Image (tube, rainbow, N blue to C red; front, side, top):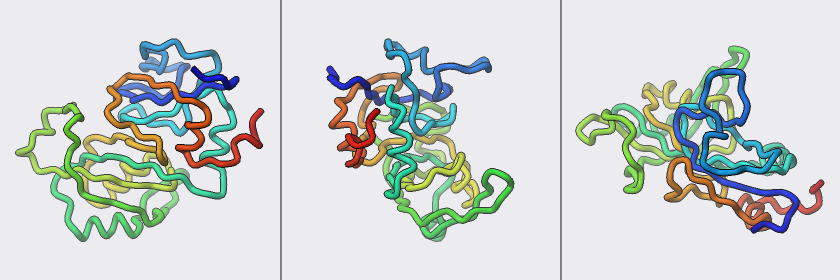
Length: 206
């Protein structure tokens, strides 16, 4: 499929799976997916084990540098299920910047971001009994251009809500869509970088 020396994949990472192939802990690894990944494949922009959704895998070691260490920030969109009804005041707080505790015990004010109340997508199967419609809850999309550790979970917690489910649905123009949990899709190199809006990838290839 791909004529490049490198290969590029997106997956829908299921919950309760870590974003790596090797671990000394007794955890479910990416190798449990029903796909024969080539040697040297690794994840870009990990999701914690409880989170779900879009995860990029590649054999190209330069992608992390191009995506997260460049001058232009790249957008990631998360679908977030929280307990109770989110008020307009809370929306404004999340949008304008909210104080969270980050590594080293430091207080950090998040960068202003887009936060919207949305309906649960029809294709998304429930994971928990508490996703019943008669239990007060809210579905949000949160669009970030930064990635502090557990940032989305910490943001909604600081706003007084419990994060019940967290799904990354896009990174720039690469979208999860209706890709089933555990499924893998390979992408052509040029389309991969085009959808990530990375224009200088040919100049920094190995």
